[in-house]
Length: 281
Image (tube, rainbow, N blue to C red; front, side):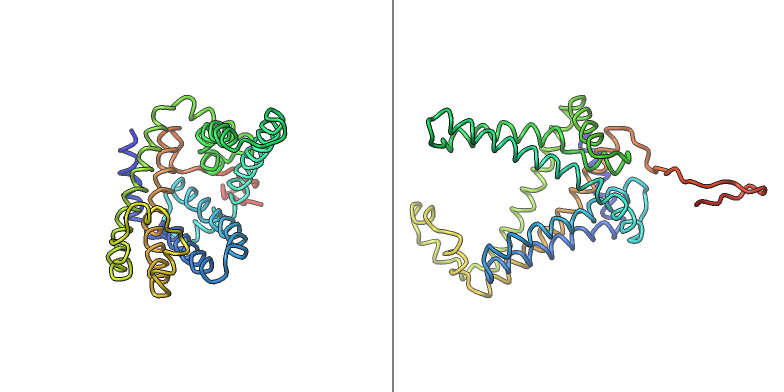
């Protein structure tokens, strides 16, 4: 099942150029954040990460609406993105709040159980055991909101129900997404190494302990300003190729999993006149 939807997603991305817009936007944002991280540090970059995420919600919602309606124009993407913006955003904010609350409770529990000192190993283990099942069950809340016009808690419940009923197929979907992400990372990492071979050549003389001890800051210093811009370009193209495919795959997989119609006709308020013409309010 998962391969059939992957083929459909590849065909959609290939035949619908507008689906590349989210990838271009995400690539530009990723490259910008990388450059700002090296120029201005983490203080400004960490705040722009949140803004970038809020911007991407518009294009995520627009992509889901575009595929749901089998449309191919940018106007539909923008209209659907605006219409379903908060329907897509708010469920994830609720899930994030719940995870933060659980993390706080885990922190309090470990401090009380260890007599005043936090056991970070136990905290990390408990957090992972809570976070992974939660994200697994609620992963399709945004897709449910866009495809079925559901509100916050209804979309979360819908995602949990779908994943519970089709756990094997959903697990296969995640495996395919991981494989696609690995291939994209591997290919562009090879391109990055090839372009910066001269600057990275000193690393070939390092032993294993020296390579393990190198920090990101040292690596950035090693590649220099030119390498920083080359890395930004690699980030851009890597994201451009990956994001549209993953978004289209998620939408096609959800549509196939739930049997959602390709086109969702919204109910409008209005009336027919004496000649049978429809007038909406």
